[in-house]
Image (cartoon, rainbow, N blue to C red; front, side, top):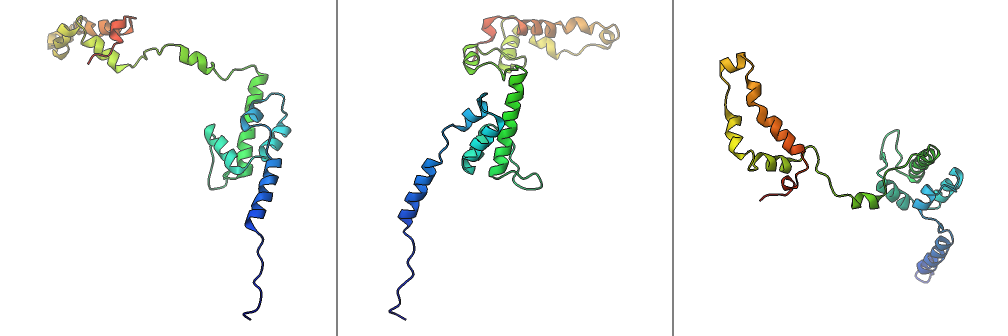
Length: 182
């Protein structure tokens, strides 16, 4: 028994080299982005092209596009065919948008060139307006309680005009309110 020859196993290096050669031959010529966005590619050609990619590449493409991957249950699509189905759904949506001549949105270069506009709910801007030289002396007015007579005669509207004026100043294009004061 000691003289018996052990079973020969195939060389790991030889197998790996041949597999790498096959993978290089089967490497897709187009990227996933080009397959999805190319108008000249038909739906069938796109699907065939996507099937040439590995599951990991397809999963990464789905995550980058924030597509919903369901990992368990009846709607599980956490496999290569599921990733291809999600990407094909996206391709069909792109094709439909191109048919309707609908744009996805402005190009990113245009977005970066436009200065950031203050939003309607910009708290630092509101604080700058409220504590500006124009309104700082009127802040104690906010704490006053109206008397019963003022409430009965609806005179409280006149005293709340500070909020109307703060609102007008907040919406004004004055650059001094946009500066952060520390």
